[in-house]
View 1 (cartoon, one colour):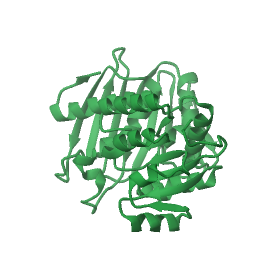
View 2: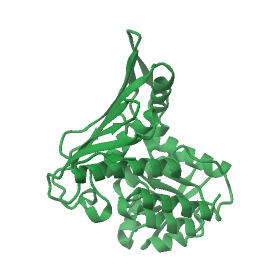
View 3: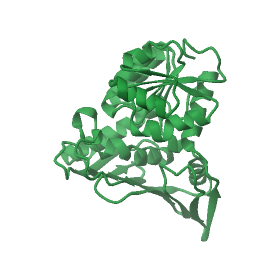
View 4: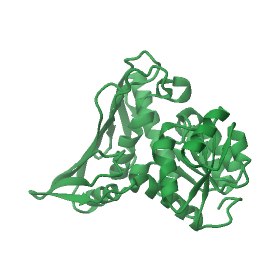
Length: 334
């Protein structure tokens, strides 16, 4: 529980930065919940003020430090570029604030461990914002893989979208831990891990079509000593696709629009088990709101979130191994 929290039923969030995902998804999700955004910060005071006006946020700050000094807050949401997640998550913890941090939690696994240990010492709740894990369809797909499928052998997962005509996008900046693996590849890795666990080794091939110093496309194989495997892919160079499929000896389950699922559409998963094909449909839900509510519930109960620091470190270990393999051309043992 944060030092500032007075009412476990309702959290007041501060938002560190004015990133696109904050304005389009997470701030509206908080507003739609029983919680509220009390303040937003940017290193540009005018930008913070404009964001606050646009989203009916009562206070804006011209520095991240000023937001952390705002006594009205219980928690912070961190949508900063990847390379800044660790520093500002730790500084928020130092201010006694619980932290919902965008994925990936840090630039590498060692830094992620440092962040997790820091938050534990400060006694604050830390959650990595893998929103897709909170969608009922994801929960059902994982349950299906675990209960209806016998002997899962392979997982195939992909998240790619076109990042054209934006040469200055932070996702192309190596100094800010950019690249497709870090930005969207973390989702296929998270899904593969949720089904199969941490792999024994990883192999990857990457390309940098922008000469940006980061991968703009990556294809990887996660290998398990018992013969199971996962294929993961990410990229900024092709049309939008996000899907996964779990294959077992007696069937499969498959999901399209898998990770950044639209909040206003009914969604489905398709499957085949023992020769019988079918589909399950799910009503439209806002997975960002479900994520916020899960975080708030875990803050109130002082229990561990689903996508907690331990899971974040495990995911980063796999991302690190894929990145190292892509750089060296050799498999990397985990």
